[in-house]
Length: 292
Ligand SMILES: Nc1ncnc2c1ncn2[C@@H]1O[C@H](COP(=O)(O)OP(=O)(O)OP(=O)(O)O)[C@@H](O)[C@H]1O
Ligand SMILES: [Mg+2]
Image (cartoon, rainbow, N blue to C red; front, side):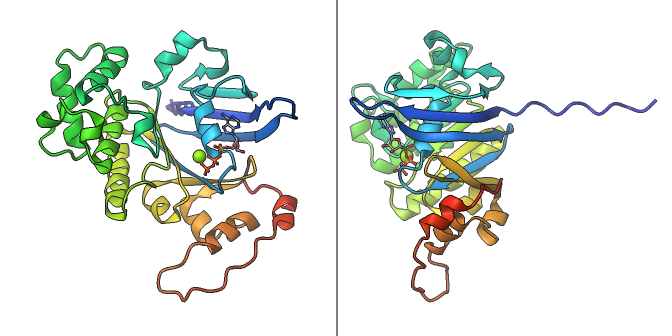
């Protein structure tokens, strides 16, 4: 008898026709995201690129309903994370999803770290909420601080955020996100504020942890340089829409959409003389259908 092949697991993240608008007092609502669709499997890594204001962060925050509603209004045919229908969850249910199913790290550690709590207190709170089975919290915290490359982690337990350098704060924020063992980590410009050598270390760390933890990763960045090392796929956003998606090599080597081509044209290539940048033809971009 032929063995039946096991059904492949459902995608971790399923976004269908997601739109986000912001209501403005006395004005028309602003459409920040205009019907985007995406899927992400467990362990997969997606980079989202696009110019400032194209809707990258709004999309990311909508996944755990972290946008203030109002002024935001989120609609979608489907928005599911690990099988949870995010749009129908109440605040209590959302709190369980945040941190456990989806964790975030941002450009500014100060948006995630509480200045009046020690590293130990804030990480212990996260553990208590999302992994109550962990009995020896200090040991667990030390282990995560060590994993993100903090030397002598025992000594950092009692530190307040301001006592740590920017790179160290970023690492604590990553440790705090990872100690809950999220299925999906969303890193929104995680290294922009850091100097280049620390950027590289943090990106290498994310790439390594993603593999060792089989975590999914969404990396939002302006930096094409780091995408190749971390992402399996790329989604290119332009004015609230995804204009092109594909495997990372395909997007970087053979971009098809004029906006992707224009974005890549702006990246100085190693070893090439800096050519005059082509003017961006926004009309052509608007007229070209998405390549998905
Ligand atoms: N809370 C908010 N209230 C009103 N408008 C908002 C809010 N958050 C985002 N927007 C608007 O939605 C649009 C998309 O913003 P978003 O932050 O998603 O852009 P982005 O692609 O992340 O840009 P950047 O690369 O600069 O971070 C922008 O026009 C922004 O002004
Ligand atoms: Mg942003």
